[in-house]
Structure formats: structure tokens, C-alpha cells
Image 1: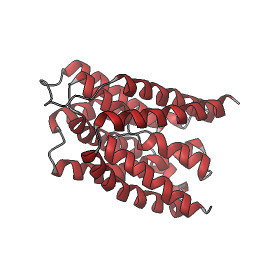
Image 2: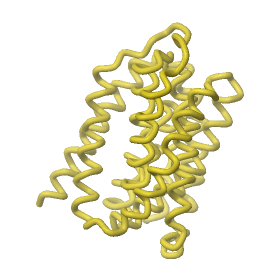
Image 3: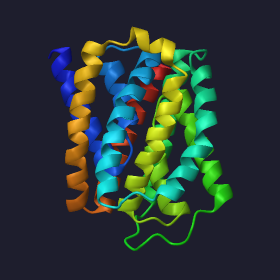
Image 4: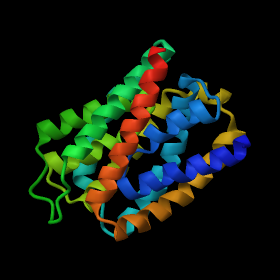
Length: 249
């Protein structure tokens, strides 16, 4: 199968995850870029940030139009993560590739466990953000974004549900604001590394992801948040197991 077809298929899946779940795009994009399209882990994290930034901004617009974005809480999470994202992004190029792969697998497994253990609420969000906990969570997500090339949404959604008691739809929409801000901050520190990105692959990948995000938004309106969350958690566990095995062998 040609690289173009693989990029289009992978991009559609990544966009579907971002649109429906408000996260998970990078967790799928990075292994797809490495194992299907032949990117190195370092190049894959940079390319992933480009793809996720464009796709999450598109999905954010779609969710904002239906009132699913809690701008105040999202801004608090995002602001706390900007500096950690930039600092970790600058440090990422100095780490060995097997370490990055193993760390990515561990984080993916942690996210899957959290999603399996978290039950989305169906009522309105309860109360305002707890500033200290929200800022701490946002800073941690920002650091992960910079270090591993992930938008952080796959951890932001469980955090918004458990810490701020958001219903699933609001958590999905708000996480896209966090992803967009963190990805932009981390991408800014990797400006020099974007010169070596294969745009012939990244362009179609990104285009398919943007289209997939719109389909994901429509899917999220038809399927229960619990089902979406559990299915994606199982996919995360499979990806984590594969990448960890690869890093240790």
C-alpha cells in the first residue's frame, strides 16, 4: 500500500478520534507515522504536532458552535501548560529515541486505565475550577505535549470529567482548546525541526484528519460518551503494548 493511501487512512482515524473524544489524535498519529510511514520518533513527534494543531483548531471551531467549550476552565488549563510545553519541547531532541518511545507507551497505558475507570457524567458541570488542581494538571499536560509531541487531550478529558465534573460533551470540546494551545506552544520550540518534515505525507495526513474531525463531531452526538471512551481506551492499551514491546526489543 502506498504512503499516500496509508497517510489518508491514518489521518481519517486520527481526526475521528479528536472530533469524537477531544483527544487521542497524537497517541494514534505518532505510532502511525513511525510504523506505517517510516518516520523516526523525533520526526514523528514534530509531524504529529503539526497535524494535531491544524485538526484540533478545526474540531474546536465545530464544538464551539454547539456550545460545548468551557472557555474559562480551558484557558486556565492551557495557560498553566504553555511554559512547561515550551521547555519540554526544547529538551525532547536531547533524549534517546528508545526512551521517547517507552515514555510514550507508558503515558498511553496510563491514559487508557484512567479512561476505563472514569464514568462520564450526563448533567451540567458542577462548580468552578479548583485553581491549584487545574493549574497543576494543566502544567503536567503541557510538559507531556512538549516532550512527547502529544496534544494532551487524551489525559485532559479524564481530568476535566473527574476534577471539574464536566459532562463528556463539554470535556471533549474544552479539551480541544487545551490541545490547540499546548500544541502551538510546543510547535513554536521545534521550528527548526519542521524543515525536515515530509510535507508530501503530512499534507494529505492533515487534510484527512481535518475531514475526519467533522465526522467525529457528528459521531459524538449520536453515540454515548461511555461507549466512545471505553472503545478508545482499549485502542490505547493495544498501541501502548505494541510500542513498549518495540522499545524494549
